[in-house]
Amino acid sequence: MSKPLVSIVMGSKSDYDTMKAACDTLDRFSVGYDVMISSAHRCPESTAEHARTLKERGFKVVIAGAGMAAHLPGVLASMTTLPVIGVPLQAAALSGLDALLSIVQMPAGVPVATVAVGKAGAKNAAVLAVQMLALSDEVLADRLQKYKQEMNTEVSAANDELRAKVKGNQ
Ligand code: RP5
Image (tube, rainbow, N blue to C red; front, side):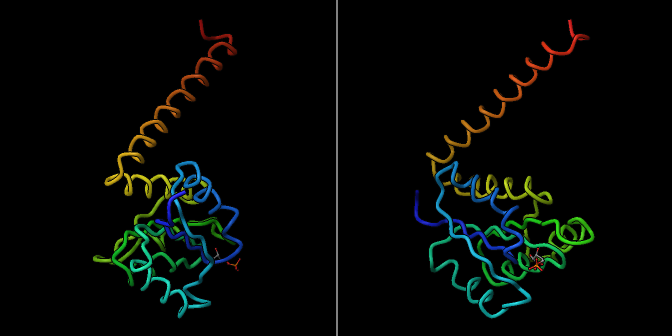
């Protein structure tokens, strides 16, 4: 595993079940990461300290997951020049729509690359981070190519299986 290049931050321990998909995906690509809980609302000072020192500690990309009034990705983006990928999480009453709107609607000049709500988003955040890192890493670029090929093969096998099982297809 390489030194940590991706900082994964989430607002609460209740977010980990979903954000684990980002950790697992980075593991699959053998990309080093650091994972932590830090809340923009409940511990703003340490969140700011983390954001301001990301670059000097060697991180290249940030993945931030949060639910409800999900300010964490935007707050981190406001204090670093590293790219920040925001993962809206399903929490409480509004099933993630609240977090999605909060994360995606950043004001001009402070982007957060917002992915899908929930586990698909957490996984895609990791794949997107790998794609960013692969711009200057041929080994990672090769791994991404193989990953796409594997997805292609899986869909093709599922298609063959379905077509063999369902009578209507001749
Ligand atoms: C957000 O509030 C967290 O990201 C979490 O998704 C949500 C609820 O947090 P808990 O009350 O479960 O700690 O800050």
